[in-house]
Every structure is written in structure tokens, then in C-alpha cells.
Length: 109
Image (tube, rainbow, N blue to C red; front, side):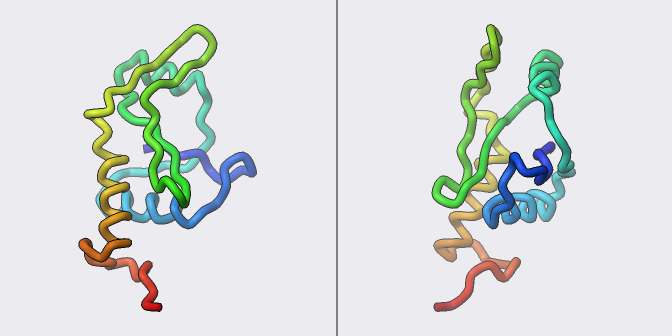
């Protein structure tokens, strides 16, 4: 897993932090560093690109089905989006209390 670091172009956010925490807790190796479009294209060529998604407060996870850059279109298999589906389901499960909040994110009103 690679996510862009917070360099001013990517906003720091609670949802982003929660996703990072969940993925690390699940055992995913996560690296925060700049990512170039050339790196994404190469990962796709090499068969290593499985998922692309964004995070945000309202959507939680926004999976990317297609990515277009110049004349290249990458189509991602939405049935293989295991990481983003896990993160989305877990965040929503914690929110609606069907999954235990072991991180202390839910604050009683």
C-alpha cells in the first residue's frame, strides 16, 4: 500500500488517518511517500496495481474504476477491491456500532 504523504497537495484528515490506522492494524504494510503517475502506469503494466481509492468525510472511501492519463486508460476490476471494501465496511461498522470500536473513535454524546 502506498499513500501520498502530506506535502500540501494532500489534505490531512480524520478519515485518512482512520483508514491508515485500520490498514496497519490489519497487517498491511503502508508507505507514505510521493507517487508519480508514471509509477502508477508502470505498476499497472506489471500487473501490480489492484486498487486506487480516495478518502473523505462524506464518502469514507471513493473507489476508482477507471483512470485516464493522456492516451492511457486503466480499468480496475471492482470485484478485486478488497482493501477499500474492508476499510469502508469497517469504518461504517464502527460508526453504526455493529463492529467493536477498539480504537476509541466513538465518543458517547
